[in-house]
Image (cartoon, rainbow, N blue to C red; front, side, top):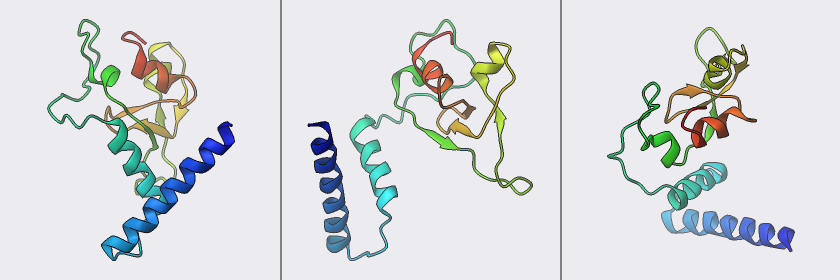
Length: 126
């Protein structure tokens, strides 16, 4: 049952890309970028007035990183490094030294994808 649902969703998104390409006249619309923008449009409420994460807000219950939907992305390459990495903020707080190539662009925090990204965005004191 689940496989059929995912096939149906994938086919629906593919047809949406095809329709978008046909209606807009642009044949170079990237399928992956379209998917990412679709997910963001469906999940994010669009309020731009909420402030971004800056440091630790242990007393503030309305921390944007806990309320908004954020997605992990690779740290963009810089001049000196083709695959840059940074220290994970959750691991660092827990006295572990672990480098990661992923970060949250909204929070501007480097995070391990496995456990730390979820902990950082769901727990007040990670």
